[in-house]
Amino acid sequence: MQTYGNPNVTYDWYAGNSGTTNRSGKFIAAHAAHAGLMMFWAGAFTLFELARYDSSLPMGNQGLICLPHLAGLGIGGIENGVITEPYGCTVIAVLHLIFSGVLGAGGLLHSMKYEGDLGDYPEGSRPRKFDFEWDDPNRLTFILGHHLIFLGLGNIQFVEWARIHGIWDSAAGVTRQVQYNLDFGMIWNHQGDFLSINSLEDVMGGHAFLAFFTIIGGAFHIATKQFGEYTEFKGKGLLSAEAVLSYSLAGVAYMAFVAAFWCSTNTTIYPTELYGDVLKLQFDFAPYFIDTDSSLVGDTHTARAWLSNVHFYLGFFFLQGHLWHALRAMGFDFRRVGKAFENMENVKITAGN
Image (cartoon, rainbow, N blue to C red):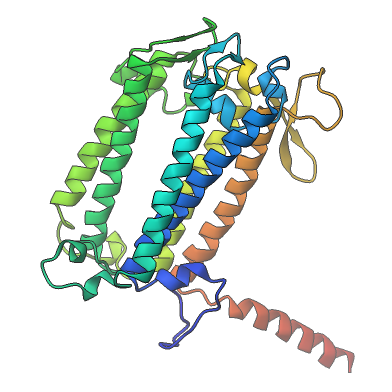
């Protein structure tokens, strides 16, 4: 973290990231607890939505978030965009609550019982393998490789779910099995126009390709180290906790913007019967998405409007966080901004006298 030359800097309690800066064990604890919170929200909110779900109204006009996603996966006995078997959604919700408890317990265990720094474990022990320093590219690339492999496995799970169980097909109006179309030409051509994809087979083909690509990439990062000398061209001097955080925020911002625009216009992945009609991009004080469904009454908004706008503005703030931490990683002292305003004020006072 940027310390502005103070080797004994301390942070306030609300500076959460600073507590894990040089303590890899606490970093794992924070990850586990964070995953537990996300699991708890998903489970609890699914139950909340089930309690207020009205099958006589269009699903997309009820302000729902979790249920449309579950319906899109073919969970809930979907017929004409209506959940007919809520038991499946209830099972998913309860499983998320159970897993949230397991992850939360793991976070507490790593935080209170295990070593705060994995480097304190004996040499050669398994926990020691995952100890890292933010400026050590070899160890970071080793950990990155494991992340990529798990992402690949997640893609495989999604592709196999669609192939064996089936997902909701808006065009056919049924939940059907989808075979992935692993056409590399199609995947290459969709790099620039992926928002217009209208084939579930192509969507699954893209995920199958990502599974292969990320697993191969993960194996590469685990097996290899930096080629040649670690020079300034490769980022030497910029690899730090601040820098890695800024890269992560940039990636999350990009995904949020993609999700916002995809959700606002695409009806293959976000069917109208589950999320409502497509949106219109409006420019006022700031850009935002508005509903085009004239049947909406009062302050009612479609699930598509909620998802698109929330993702868009979260992406905007994540992008600001990226710029903030990237500049700090490059050594920019933001205290200079305050001093500049103070100097301007002093100049005004002097000129007035």
